[in-house]
Length: 234
Image 1 (cartoon, helix red, strand yellow):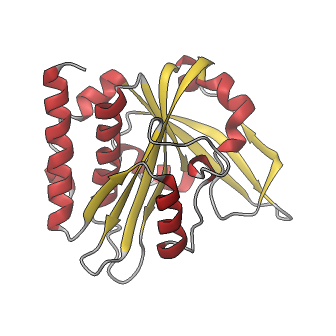
Image 2 (image 1 turned 135 degrees about the vertical axis):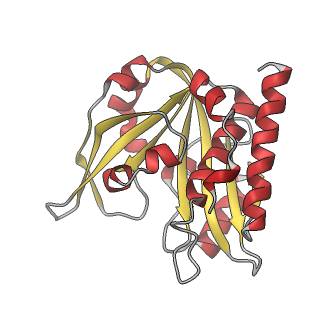
């Protein structure tokens, strides 16, 4: 990244951190995944740690991944998300056709043998230095931040931090179909999506959880960070 791009990205991330601070959320960024696992076990027991960021199952460390936590003024964990980087040997479609089971939604009884991934045109064109964006969670409840626009702003904070740390060629993530239908793709800042990418089958049930793959290239990230984020939080 150029000095100008670095300054723009840092300013963008700082504006978001300040805006969510005004809403009562303090953001922390780290790369100690033992500490992150302990935090999840203590403060987010209803949604277990996702496998892509579980150091017992995946090689996540300070060089290839980071997490973000958000805390209320009362000391409650109210938000999480995380990023992990890869160097793709071929393209993302080839990588996921063999490895999509490394990215399951957490806390669900899945039938991984029946589950499947269908590559879309976006995944076939994604190559090089790529990041996975996951662990997105916003605490529900009477004082819920959901519906305030803050979820999209927080996602952009993670995207900006990934750009500042690694300047990747692409960033991708997965999103339940029901959330994509409600416009979360655009609210989070993603400019592209592959519908019908994932079909997670449940154990002993006909239910299927359908998912989109969302993604952005480096030029998309540059454009996203040129848009002031302050108006997104209501």
